[in-house]
Image (cartoon, rainbow, N blue to C red; front, side, top):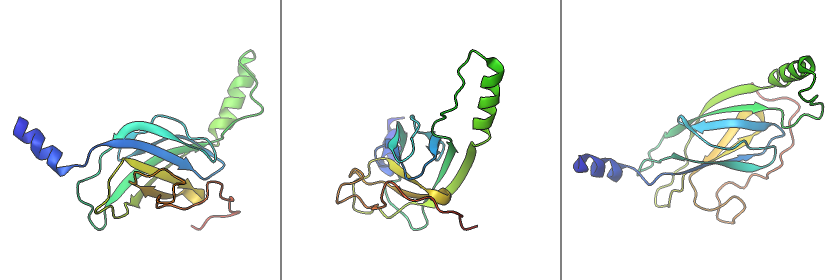
Length: 160
């Protein structure tokens, strides 16, 4: 059994956390990478996530992808009626749920050959676009590979 564990660990880089950086006005209610869930909601134009959940293969290979599943929804609701009037609450909940969307996308993993790998950070962009990195640097650090500004304008329409 020790030989099996050693063999498996020799094929994988150490596991790391999942983080999200949200460049949109929607909340990211939940997300996962290859089925491994992040913990926290990521608000509009915020960072979040956490959770121990991404283990990169020891070696990057051309064409390597991850599957990102996520759910977007309204970030806040100024018209929350409270719970006293249950019918009003249920109507409100229905309006909020109607704005919730589920998404799934395969995204290419950038080459991390010769670099330390520290989990995965997913950038959520307008039009259900994504960027990912395994960088150990924090977003905003000059060495962080993704330079996309946090607050991106929402386009009036998205390409099909």
